[in-house]
Amino acid sequence: MRTAQATIMAEVRSNEKDKWFSLDISVDYEGQTLPLEKIWKAWVRGKRYVQLKDGSYTSLPEAWLEKLSHKLTALGLDPGKPPQQKFKQFEAPVLDSILEDLPNASTDSFWNKLREKISTFREVKPIAPPKGLNASLRGYQSQGLSYLNFLSEYGFGGILADEMGLGKTVQTLAFIQYMVERKFHGPNLIVVPTSVLPNWEREAEKFVPGLKRLTIYGTRRDSMFKHIEKSDLVITTYALLRRDLEEMEKHEFNTVILDEAQNIKNPNTITARAVRRINARMRLCLSGTPIENNLFELWSLFEFLMPGFLGSQHAFQRGIVKPIKDGDAETLEYLRTRVRPFILRRTKAEVAKDLPPKVESVTCCALEEAQAELYAVLARKLRAQVLADVDEKGLARSQMSILDALLKLRQICCHPRLLKMDLPGFSNNLPSGKFDAFKDMAMDIVEGGHKVLVFSQFVQMLHIIRQWLEFSQVPFCYLDGASKDRFDQVDRFNNSPEIPIFLISLKAGGTGLNLTSADYVIHYDPWWNPAVESQATDRTHRIGQTRQVFSYKLICQNTVEEKILKLQDAKRNVAEAIIPGQDTWKSLTREDLEMLFDV
Image (cartoon, rainbow, N blue to C red):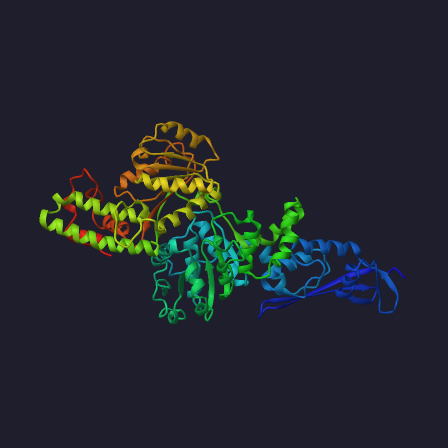
């Protein structure tokens, strides 16, 4: 046996066109070169020496081999095998990590440029907002657009994980508009929860009106698939994607984007498997929750974004999850370093200077199918009754019947369980699309570490929410007109960081409360008098509030809720016209009533 100096040699070659890299590692012993595979094979068998070409034996570079093996384990790769020889472009951070211990590695210009981009991704080249975008982006939103373009330019997938309320939707739509204007081939697919489908349609119409949009929804979808190729933006739901997968797989999309990407947090569900089968040049996830804290959710998202990037599920469990649970700080740092370039998350605190003191928005929700059917049947019945009453008595003397009819329709929008009447063929025990949207929104806020006020006019609706919170083991405070501990509840909420939600009825909490510990407000059902709604929001947006306040109004699409919003825009004082005790009914016409009760 002889002792020869071992020099680790490595070469990276790029295929810029097909976006992959090859890695060739060998060990040179004073002119005699051995491939890494031979060195590795001897080492994993427990040998300390290797035979050279001249027949002599020399020692293995054990310190380097051990360090590389540990790194492969931390990266979720199999430490029993040497590093792979071919890397996809999105695996560049893996390759970069391996090259850290190979200072003599030979690389080319494309790799060097990409490596620089990855290491300084927060300083990517700014791009101008697209001309067809009907919105003014805030500073951090422009940075988000540039970041998404960076991912696209270098063939990566990524997660836009901005905190709720910071505009993930407008940044995503701006990016799609940007790609369309630059002639990227193929439609862009967005997959969303059913409950927020109307909100995406509404926002797309508002911010990117020039895009050719296609919403794949409803029972008559068969005729829609042929229009996919001619569309710029295609929107569907997770539930329908599972059913329509065979049709959707026939198309090559430019991007596929998952909204509320926590819907695939379990990698073994039918939904998670379905979205991974969609063909797309680029993949994105949108998630307002801090996914970095859930390792298997993180693995599932990256398995969709860039398959194989975090290794196999088994290797990830063995090489990353277990060591991190055992307190291995080095493995945790490897994981953070690896995923950091592909997750962009900004919090309200980070972008405070870009935000106004109060951000108010309307979130459109879809009725569940059975809920929509119940609404349609009741709306037709009530329309006939109300218009007959108005024709007989006039508008002024028909106030009570109009209000009662509107109340019933609004109750169905909130939750069918609120409706206190029997309709043949219908049960009140139906799901609620608005409640589903509310639950997702509330959990996003809570998981982001914020506190939220939830207002409703219907005490029974607050009871339904309360039951869900109790079942979910989420602490909350509660206040309605019958509460005897009004100020105790206020003090508990303001002084208890572990209580994130305060349920409040209009009667009990519209005025006289100081709740500045909250920075989010959800109006579960709209209050037709904007002044009253504003008073409720100002329970938190008042003197003493040091943070931005986000206020959300939940509105069901194609219902009396949406129609009254339109009336508010069209007619001054119409809100007061449909509130008991007001004398402005003269501003409401028979045509207005027909529109309100139309289906």
